[in-house]
Length: 44
Image (cartoon, rainbow, N blue to C red):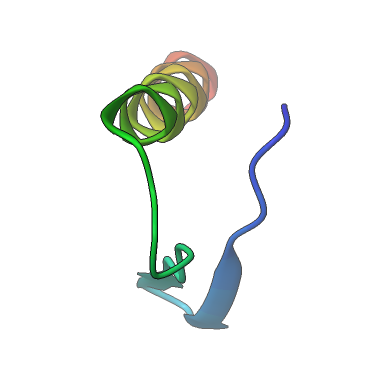
């Protein structure tokens, strides 16, 4: 989906954005995560 995240434990998702990030890039990450969580919720 175009976003790299690091899962450090069973219930921890570590986001490590660059030091300089634009609002539209943050919005894209939030949108992708939202879609992932919706997808997980539908299958559980």
